[in-house]
Image (cartoon, rainbow, N blue to C red):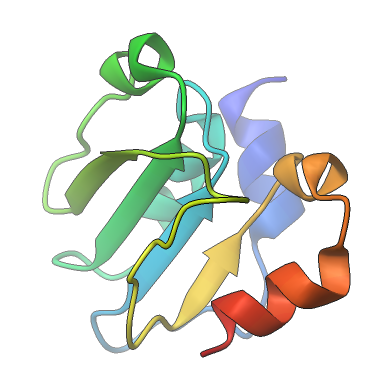
Length: 109
């Protein structure tokens, strides 16, 4: 998938356009949707890029004027300790979650 396609898939009127925000890209892989999200958020916003594959995380480009914190973690089983998120992107990773309802409840705390 190309970056422009990823941007089109997540570009929505509900994305914050006027203030910095904090997001998580869970199961981010090498960061295609991290980059797409970064292109849509206000400069100075923060994205937690979370994946269990350290090699994939190392491929993530840090966009200018954006904070990207890379976290190596098994997002299904590990406690992520993310607070005050404005949103979560799970482009493909939700398919790997067996108990989706419990996972969503865990993330909404």
